[in-house]
Length: 166
Image (cartoon, rainbow, N blue to C red; front, side, top):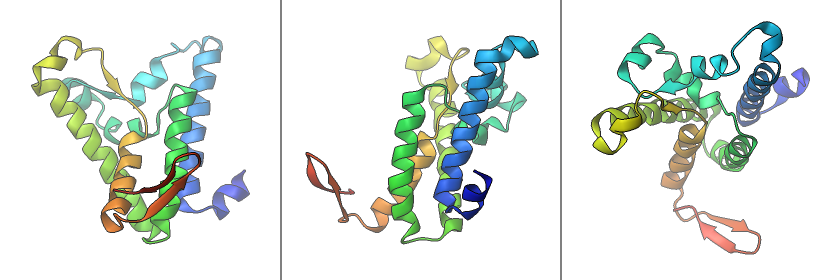
């Protein structure tokens, strides 16, 4: 696994990192009682809270939430999208640009989450218990980047046919 990680593209490295964090969280949630750790402590430590006070107390969560998944279907869908869109992105851009898009998308998604939960009244009731997690913002930034660069590029989906990126 270490050899594959070192030899893989940046897209594969991000996938491996997401899987490793998922496995660590799964192990702590399943066997946390052996370490006398609350099962949700690790998730709460790395996910982005909806309150500004929570964010100020844990500023690293603006980035770390983009690597935390607690559901198998959530990580599966994010990483499948990251694999296909990320490899398409890498074929036209550099790995450094991929990292920049991913992290800026994650940061921007986190800031939009914070602002929306604190300034739009529809979210006001549940602000103290809400957390943001998952790689969707980073994956979306990669997708938007490649779709902006090549909007008429067509992807072929089984049973659907060709679909343009835009």
